[in-house]
Each structure stands twice: as C-alpha cells, then as structure tokens.
Image (cartoon, rainbow, N blue to C red; front, top):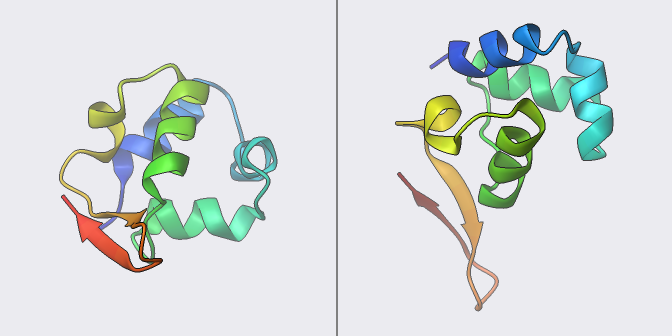
Length: 79
C-alpha cells in the first residue's frame, strides 16, 4: 500500500527522496520503497521521519506495519 501521507509530508517540506534519505543515513531507494509500499521503516526510523517532517508519527504511518527489534533479536511486526 502506497504511503501517500509520507510523500505529501516530504514534498510539503520541499525535500527530495534523496535529501530525506541522506538525513536518515540511507539511500534514496529506501525512502522510495517506503513511499511506494514495498517496505516499511523500523519504528525508530518512523519516529525520525516524523520528527524531520514535523508531523505526528500517526499522521504519516497510521495503519502501516513497522518493524521493531526485540531483545531476542527477532523482528516482529506491529500495527
């Protein structure tokens, strides 16, 4: 599912995918994948994106699954 909220918020801040990715230490393809629904950010990255874009995390990632790291090094999806 495409994340149009993320795309809209990024464009409102006049940031390119490459610029946002650079702020997070990723390649442009990572942000593109998040926006196009091919992958989802970790919970930590979702909070960072929300902070950079000046939005509440729920406004950008509501209804999407994000990955959280557990103490036993497993990754689990949460809604």
